[in-house]
Length: 335
Ligand SMILES: Nc1ncnc2c1ncn2[C@@H]1O[C@H](COP(=O)(O)OP(=O)(O)OP(=O)(O)O)[C@@H](O)[C@H]1O
View (cartoon, rainbow, N blue to C red):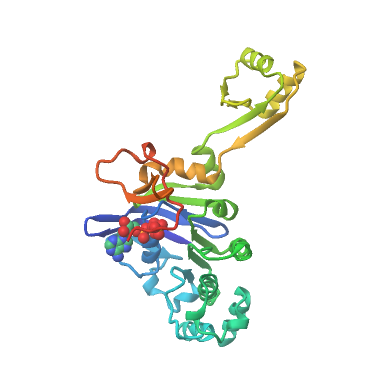
């Protein structure tokens, strides 16, 4: 279990993490989401004792990180896959970590096998691709067989097979009763992996809830209907007191009624339906809805580039929701 209590980090004028209080529980995958610069990495660094909180507290199974004896046996983390000695082989990199944490040499072979790097174990890490580096970082996190695992953007650079593998790995680690805390900007991936979400924006807690509740609370769900007898169907729906949104095109959208009810009404009036489909917004839409006001960095269309170019929102700029599409999902970072 990871417990944060009023955790705060200030860098000069910048409040990177602002009084965060939440608990990451065992047995489930908890996703950690937020727009660029929201404070996710800073939070994770404080958890590992790499950054000192300005105020507040964070505990790993009830203890501060720097009090843990052989910390890799308590918490394994992938923060920055490139943060390793490139001149060392994958095997030696892991062996050094193992020796400094009282972990037997045989475990190095096991984790190399788990992440699929046995064949390149003697190759220098600096020659590794981004995806291989991620796998090596994940091997390091698994080395101490810890009860708590934390991954910052673990699918970065992985190919589809690798993404599928890490998704199943995280789920199986949680199913074994471990605490799994993972950040990602890939919403579609997060939707498939996480059971619970912690969402932050500008260092503050925005949500701490189950995936299903998060999507329900931050998005619209409706039923989409198409019928060749559209006008008659509209009369029937209006007659039943159902409010219909005409979305342009031939489809109708109904909020607040179940598809079963609409289907039964149509059947009673012998109306043909070509479509009757409940629609639930995606995690991505719900995330953008919730965080629109917290996005600090936006892209604006530049016709000369034929694409979008990033700019920081100037002080006093209109709220993010009134600007052009937030681009939190792209790869660029502020300098
Ligand atoms: N060492 C530092 N010195 C000064 N400011 C920092 C430092 N580290 C982070 N910040 C600032 O703190 C804020 C939070 O940064 P952080 O990297 O934690 O965000 P993040 O949510 O991980 O972002 P991203 O999704 O882009 O990785 C940002 O405004 C960042 O510029």
